[in-house]
Image (cartoon, rainbow over all chains, first blue to last red; front, side, top):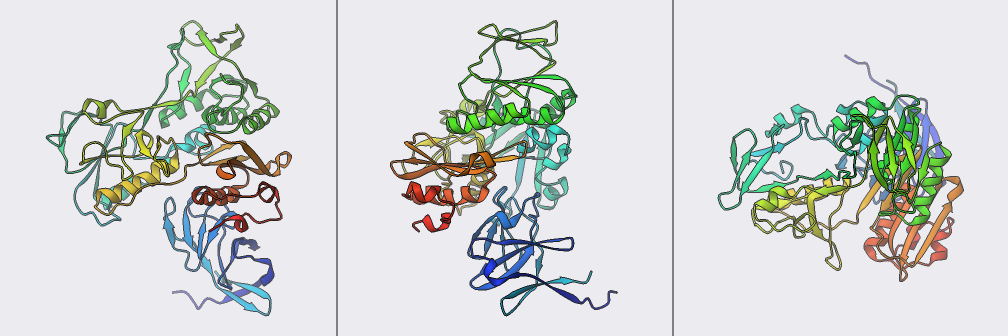
Length: 110
Length: 386
C-alpha cells in the first residue's frame, strides 16, 4: 500500500493579510488555495468551487461558511463539507499552522 | 424530498427527452460549443435509480383530475397521487409577424434549440437577434465568439430594460458595439422575408437586415394550460401561497410557472430565474413532506456576456437614486438602487461579492448613506445594520 505521506509546510501569508470577511487566494505550486480567518483561527481550502469553475476566495463569508460567488453554493470552511445546492461535492481542505505572524499551509507529499 | 426523509414513491413526468437539466449554459457555453449538452444535466441517470425516483421522460401530462387525484399521461397511462407538484415552467413567446413561420428562425429554451442554433453559428454567418434582453445579448456574445456578423434588434430604447436601469442597459449596449455587434434600439420587427428560409428581417420603420439565421428571445409565458383545465387558480402563472400550495391542498407548484407572494407587501411575482427554480422547489419539497417553511428569497439573477459577469439582486420597480460603486470604465463595479433611502436592488459587473452584501441590505431594508455606498474604502459589511 502507500508509504507514510509527509506534509510539506509552505509559508503563504501574514496573519494581518486576511480579514474575517475577505479570504485570500494563494498559490502553492499547482495548488490554488483560499485562506480564511474564522474566530481568530486560520483555515485553508481549495480555492476552486466543486460545482463550476469559480474562485471561492471571491465569495461571501458568513461565520464559518463560504458562499461561492457564481451560484451561491455553500461550504463549511473548517471541514470543506458541501452544505447547500448546487454544490454537492465536498471541498478539499489543507492543514494550517501559524508561527508568529506567519501562516503556513500543509501540502501532502502526493 | 428524499433528503427530507420521504420514503414513498416519487414519479417525475417530463415532456422533454432528457434527464432534468439546467438551462443557463444553453445560451452560453453550450451555444458556443465549449461544453456539450450533457454538462447541463443536474444528475446522471444513476442518481435517480439510486434514489428510487422514477423518471417518465418524453411523456406529457395531458390532464389532471383533482377530485380523483389522478394525472393522465400522453402514453395512455395514468398516475394516482397523494401530492402533486406542477413545475411545468414556461414556453417561449413566439413572433406573430408575417414570415414568422420561415425556416431559420430559432428560439432558445431546450437543449435541441441550443444545438440547432449552434449548428448555424459559422464564421461570417449573418445572425440577426430579435430581442435585446439577456437571452438575446448572451446569444449575441456567443455568436460573436464564433466569428458571426451579429445584429441585435431591441424594441425599447435600451437593452435589458425589463431588468436593469437604463444606465446599465446602455453600458452593455456599448460593450456589444465595442465587440462588433450592431445593436439597434427602438427597432421593432415588422416581418421576415425569404423563399422558404428566412433571408431578410424587416423592421417597421423599413430598415432591412439580411440574415442567414434569426434567433428570437422575446420572453417566455407560463405553461398553465394543465392547471387551468384542472380548475386551479391561475393568474400569470399558477397561483400559490408562500408554501407553494395551489388552490387545491394536494397540488403544489414551483419554479417559472408559480405566481407567489413576496414579503413584505405580499405582492405576487413570478420569477424566471435559476435561483427560484432551485430554491423554491427545495422549499416546496419540504412543505410536501410536512416540514415546510415560507419561501421568501430576494430574487437573484446573473448573465454572462463576453468576459463580463452581470449579477442582479432584487427586482427594481421604483427607485429615486442610483449609486455607483467602483469605476464603470474598469468594468468592475456595482450599482445600488435606492428608494426613499433604502436599498431595493443592486447590479454588479464583475463584482459578485458586492451583490451578496446588497442582498442582505435588501433583506434588512437597510437605509444607507449613498456616499458610504460609493466609497470603496468603506467595506460594505460595515454598512449593514444587523
